[in-house]
Amino acid sequence: MELPGGRSYPVLVGPGAVGELASVVPTGVRRVAVVTQDSVPVEVDPGVEYRVFRIGDGETAKSLSTVEELCSAFAGWGLTRADAVVGVGGGVVTDVAGFAAASYHRGLPVVHVATTLLAQIDAAIGGKTGVNLPEGKNLVGAFWQPAAVVCDTTVLETLPEREMACGLGEMAKYHFLGGGDLGGGDPGSGEMAGGDPGGLTLEQRVARCVQIKAEVVAADEREAGRRAVLNYGHTLGHALETTGRYDLRHGEAVAVGLVYAAELALSLGRIDDERVAEHRRVVDGYGLSGSLPAGSDPDELMAAMGRDKKAIDGLTFVLDGPSGVEVVPGVDAGVVRATIEAVR
Ligand code: GLY
Image (cartoon, rainbow, N blue to C red; front, side, top):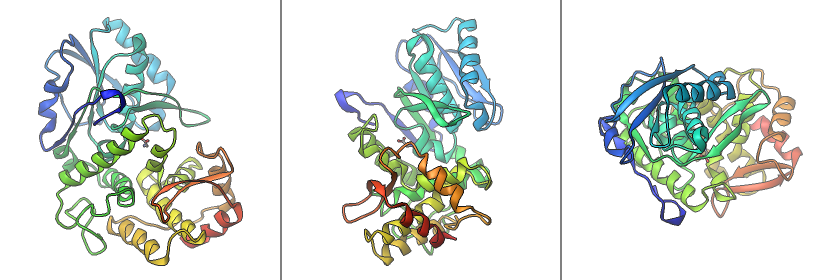
């Protein structure tokens, strides 16, 4: 992963990659605080003295109080700037461990061992760390680039089906961010739910997504512009998640959001029917639904989309178009509302 200013860090992708952890812990680090959860079935050896610190499961654990408890525990163990943090888990762990590492003693190196598909292709890459507030998701955080990321694809073999689906929703997004050949072309007829969609192994698909994300982040590390395209499908997706009534996981919500974004781009004359059909095929191909959950309330979704972090100038969406996927501010609320019907 290349960053401005000549900075870079390795992202190891492959079966058994966790065995290489010691080789990417920065040279000279004396001790490592391993941050993980009881539910993460992965053991690591960072190659130096280490202690394991466990945090709770789920989005509720992604809180300032978890970071406070973690940093107190670091202090209790006497963690210093000569040491490092290793986060072992999915997005909750990498976000919390990364933010604790960014904050404790004003910054320690962090290495992420990403154990879910979602973390491997998104959360662990690119340096976004942070926690939720009662007022919303990811409202407090820091950009803190890891020293390295380890994506062991063997670990994904035991991932619960729903957790895998969550990652596949994010993977679907990359098809429209330059990964058109992801999986060897249109996955419509393939068995995508974790299988081989047409030529590429899971390892190759993870590596391709990491490469696309790395290119976007390299061009806009702190999301001044282009990086926001990584939120393709997320405006409606986040609205479905934050209204909290639909029991959808992040990737499942993003899948609906991708189809909605395509329908919205069609309504705005930015893409044609065939391109919308392509979005639907990709989402279907991953075994995900592109339709709103039963009982969805358009007023509630409109209100939530208006509160989106991107919505600085009216309703803002990431939309496909003649120049590819880009951020589009000031989208007409009437069109946004009417298009909700297209994904019912
Ligand atoms: N998950 C979006 C980003 O890293 O920018």
